Length: 603
Image 1 (tube, rainbow, N blue to C red):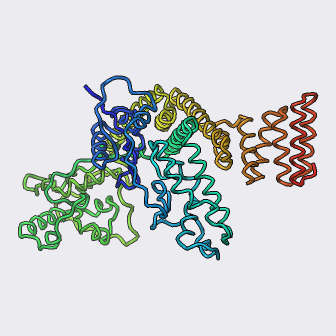
Image 2: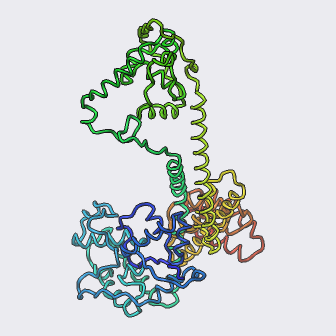
Image 3: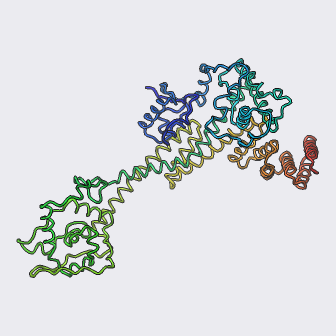
């Protein structure tokens, strides 16, 4: 027996697929590690539905379906390693010299997509052709979104020779010397930034150690994004599962359709127009006359017990006769009148028609309550013929359920409760099992997603609630660890804007980590951006570790950058006190003061 392990197909544009939400949800879980069965558990889909969606995705060419031997799933990351060990992709031939080199896949803005820059920048009077302006702006504003491979226009399997060739074709286009003595305006800084990033990409990818570190960074970034997306997806998944439970309950308690060929007013189908508008047949007219004659001997007392229904209301109900109204009273069963059973020669009650049965069912479903009397004057009661019995059939008071209606409501409620309980228990078991499997693989994001869904369905289950809270903690810690690795690499390479954002995400998972808060403040100061943000995180770091000299120096620098010179001087003094006789710490304090003075701050 084999277990298929679907794998995403490298280089396929998944955004172009015409997928339904459930299919896209399954596709987002495919990582080259989960088997078909595990995907079924994780997504909550049946095995047959999972197989069908995988077949559809395979038909689109978005995934690869290979048979894998039964046994434990391969370790996480095995799919990426196998993909990296595969044959390199065929490189696109470089254009002849002198023509611009096409950058990586999607490096430049597509023609039909809006630009990331202000179109007014194209109007700046500089010595550049319009096409060159667009190319520089397109690339400059996407530098932070492009990998080094995309920037140079090579695959992640390219060797050193291919990387150097791509660099030497691309670098002259953005080398500052190519624009010597030209009026460039604001484009000068943009061209230099692009050239610097191209050179960094070349230096990184041509060094074996630095390339390995960069590849690990890309893989970690991908994992962080996938984990964050999965955790953010959970509220939408909860809504989807709840809707599925409600749909299954409605299907379980739905009444079967009436077996009569011609549907009536309570059926979802209506007879053809010509059938509704045709004239009644002689047999139908005779039947209507006999019902009218049978209904005639009604006493005024009986009509009064019926609530003095107005002629207007009878007309709105399709001109129903008073006999038909009485025969289908509270409880829905036909009530024989004394006039019918007065003797052997009396009229015989007609059999219940399809319409009668539908009216009976409708009365039960509406709890057997009668309409309140209308404000119109009551119709004149018919005069009972001589010799006819004038005793009214006993009726339940208006607004009170009959025993039959009460029993019908109880049956429907019991059926609903049973169907809902069964559906909820099934979903709880499914997602609890999915969470357990994900937890065994240390896939904390998937485990947190599954347990949160199970916990939403079982709010009173203390054991599931406890397990969900614990898995949420593990997922937050794992995601914080991933962001810390990402932030450290960005800081080491001077990418301070990205590092500040990544360190801030670490703080979200570690709200009591003083070091992470100090790193946010430090990276923000290095990026020379939001000084208030730097002050906020530095203050939190000092609150968590008030005796740290380094954290107080970071707060002092943040105060100085924000123009709060008195606050900065106070923090420098406190740092000096904490440093005591420690020569290293005192040197740090002196160095920080000197840096603040160079910035023009009197501290």
